[in-house]
Image (cartoon, rainbow, N blue to C red; front, side):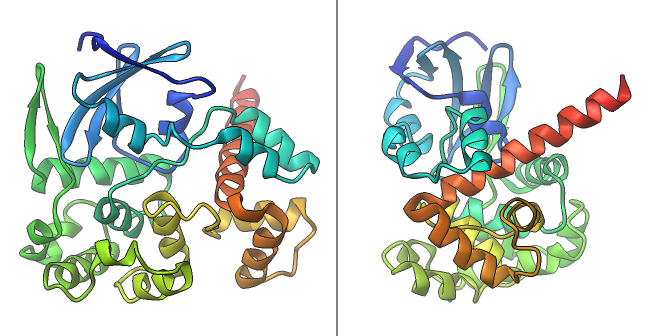
Length: 285
């Protein structure tokens, strides 16, 4: 893949960090850049300093998808000044919360339950390759995420063959609900956050954690905080909330981190993952 001729200014942005911080799972490295899909359209991205090179014609979509319009100075200034938060904000400088397509985000996080990032990525690619629309892009073939209609006609065994395990039943049921019009993912975008959360949790396999992932990574509710095992551990150990329930941790996060608690959560999450990986690598030397 050759470097695209169109470029955008991207001061204070880190493409690799944004694509690798555990919020999106299908972008693939190609040379010094990345290839993937923005919705149903293929795109090549490559960063050189404060310039982002993008497939011609995809500039506006890349800006929106990568949230290059987020006011990061305002976001960073709003975060609390405690040592843990500041260390995480420093180590993840340049991260953006991506605006993912609604269905792709909901479906991906349904498949993420009890799975590590490499496993989620493998499942995403398998589903795309088997059931998503194929698109020729340069000298390779990329695949869009399969639509609800494409999955709704399958059987549970088809999805189990994609290494989904028990998640297959939930993904299939949710795809059928959406294909039948029982849930309108586009309509959820206009709801207040509390109502949107309730509507999302009507979907099979969507509890409060997955719903908050969708609210944060697709619906741009930047105050949403998905409380998973990682975040629960960080909050309990770092902020002395050892006996707090997930609901209490969510309330604490809202108070402590403020209107951009979702950014705080993602920074803390990636910082903790990076430190764990570094410690593991050091032990192997």
